[in-house]
Length: 347
Image 1 (cartoon, rainbow, N blue to C red):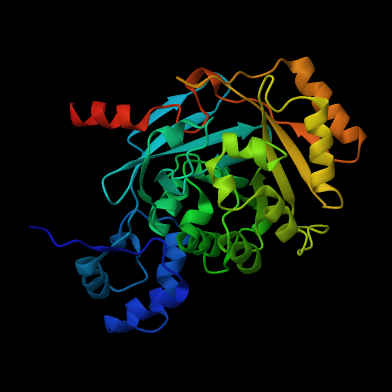
Image 2: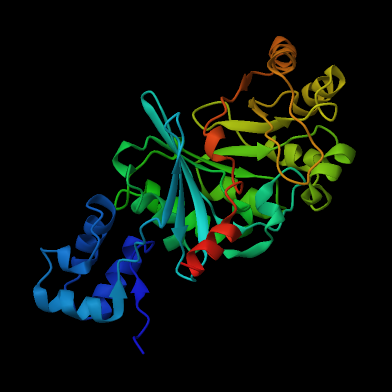
């Protein structure tokens, strides 16, 4: 039986230096490994050519890169691509690449399935199978065929990022560190429904943009749509956010899927204005696309625009997010991962 190797992808510079030290390699070899991993994106340890062959062999005995190519993809007519990546644990996770003129955004997942079980989300219907490691999170970027074109990353795929906070923070550290991808944290947005203690810690330990899944402006209505409201209510989330400065480069946004006859009235818009009064933020309105066995419907464009115009007219900057990849069900979880797994297993 082949010995399981430890992935290098996801390690910090300090950890890579420790690997080098433990193997009797020169101290600077950790920095060389970081360069090959995060700047050159090598697929094998043997490609690290400024490390001696003997040291590469020692390294390869216990370690691997940890990169795994996507095993399936669906391409939309609008250029959106949904990829299915395998994880180290033998599970599968969805990632969506969204090109848009001079921008290219990658929507990454942080978990396989999700515990939050929001009424309108297909991922929640699949149950929770586990959190991704930092290796699995970064692999969605590392092994993306269009990696070189990326301008932005959003943690809005499968899972609740705050429910896997340590690995999300580790991944964003590698993405923003000088030894890593050296991205500005302003190119990364992390979403959350609001998880007590975890959201506060994320805001204080990261400089990335924050996006809150709002979807309803009151405790009663949000509880019906999002069970997580009972754990940390939206008023508590907003009170927490008021303690931090989002008026400069760091951006705070609220995601709001508009449902016909549920959360789309002027009264709901007024409640949003009251809830967010004084916060430096924006709202992204999102169209809802039907999912199986859920009795919710989206609204037409005129309703969406009226809702946007009312909010913007009352001082809450609001945009309507363009729908992408509708022909491939690019909304997270709509390509049934469980169905795909069955197809793979029976090939």
